Length: 381
Image 1 (spheres, rainbow, N blue to C red):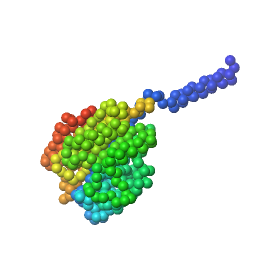
Image 2 (cartoon, rainbow, N blue to C red):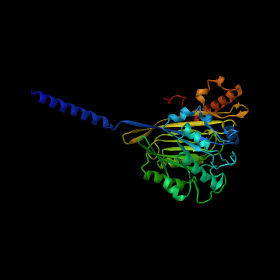
Image 3 (cartoon, rainbow, N blue to C red):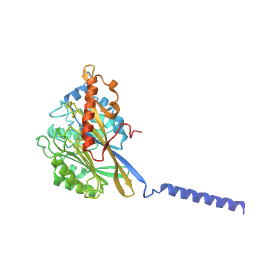
Image 4 (cartoon, helix red, strand yellow):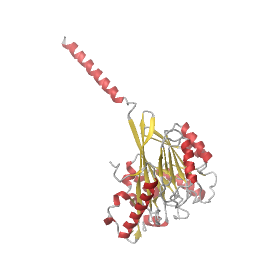
């Protein structure tokens, strides 16, 4: 064989090998798994003491970053984190209950801690009237936090419903509604989504028309401080599952309620309902209101099929020590701090957290179906 023929044939073999290798690397097998993790976070409140705690008395500016410093690793680990933002950003005077208006720095701190999306349809959405709803929408837009549940007008609602989240090859539709607004009439043209079966049924159809892989309903419902879901809650969850909804996430009671991984729903797939996430951050200190849960749900795509592949929750508790004559607020992941009594300023504070943990486990271990407690760092990289 001539030297030139040998070199030519060798070159051809190399090109064929590279071409085959490149093609194989670009092909995705039909059975390859693709996963996404979702976090659902309970009530973000803004009581007077929280506002005072965050204020710099000299500059009259606000900073809430410390509130989230112990829980930030949990929030930032997941692909998507969604929270109930239960205050308005209605401007000064900043006030807590009964008509909430918090500094925008609260939302900034949430974003910087790893919260990606807010749901705003809740019973405090109209606390500052039309101006408060508009201001909240404009400020969240300027901060860069996508949100749903409240809208400038019907045209905006039509174009922005459902909120579509596209991440890692998954198309997720997020819908949000509230049972009411504490008797405050929502003035036209602004809109706060009402928990109305016909309205929600239509919006679910819109989500399907947009080819959503997953449909999530975040509902503000139930009875305050009741740890047992009402019949209305269970009936609604079952109805929405029958329409093909995948996840029903609840807020409002300010205490924990059970979580159910329901297999083989009428629509032919699994569904999860979390009846109440409890409080994420607030100044409520009565038993069972001083903490809550973060629910983590993992979805897996195998070929064209998407399934719920894992689900669990972290217990969280709000620690409120006095530092330099001022009440501070810290959200603690319970499983990380329940073995650290030395962290707390007094034994009474540690005992209070342990009581919340014991009460929560007593409730959820007995009533949950298929959804377990996660230990902090289980999914941290």
